[in-house]
Length: 181
Image (cartoon, rainbow, N blue to C red):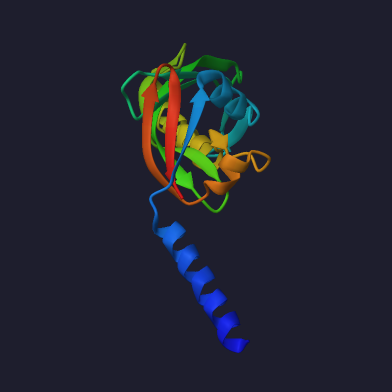
């Protein structure tokens, strides 16, 4: 009896090892709207830098470029300087970044965001360089800490896919994430 039980255990372990070594893939397709909803849930983002610069990011935009592995994101930006009249300077920031996957949480982040355009209206020359640097820091902080998408535990395909990101591409207006099981 012990021999039969041992054979079943070995057979089960062998079958498990076989299936785990097979290159199984899960493909998740995300539209611009799905990513926009995920990013929008984390807004507005407000933070103070260097004690005197209040930054607010809001109203996200997402663009997926066909054939690219980067996600383009834009946000409206407001900067208030806590000196003088404290009038807000408004504008926008557009960035692009690669996708980073954190399997433990099943979360996707924009990685290494690069500012494509930054336009803040009416900034005095004396603040221009500081505000550019602060906006770069604020955008990186926002996207580093907030996922652009989180796998849904209620979706069995997505729940099973928490292992390794194999490929990222944009096809037919969707972000295509290929994960290996």
